[in-house]
Length: 158
Image (tube, rainbow, N blue to C red):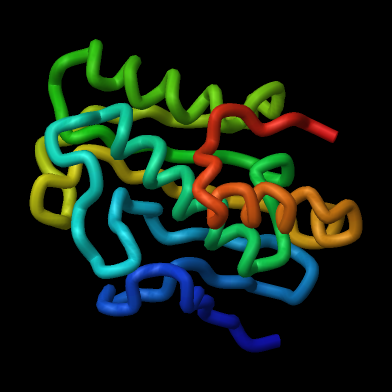
């Protein structure tokens, strides 16, 4: 089966890569790094690690929902923070952990020298299962809350 590359309409379209790929329908999705960009490609929360982590999570939720899944189906994340200060890494981790709620999938948290977009401090990659969230509706519910401007304060595990 061919690889399907996903480019959600609700995310910035000017990036030179797909936001996620699906290896087999109903199997696994591998996301590109979710960045703290708004719909127009502007970096959100310049200088604010927490705000950037929240925006990157909102974009990750949108990408996962577009793929037919949700945070509760994530198998692993990799989180990049452009800082050598551990307090910045902890700030990003806390915002991301809060969004995931009780779903504490394996994760790698890395401090790096720089990320790809101007003023970018946070990036989040995820690997997730596809299928069970579509049946339960949890991905769509969270995606709608984010799109409605509710933000991500907590994601409840079904």
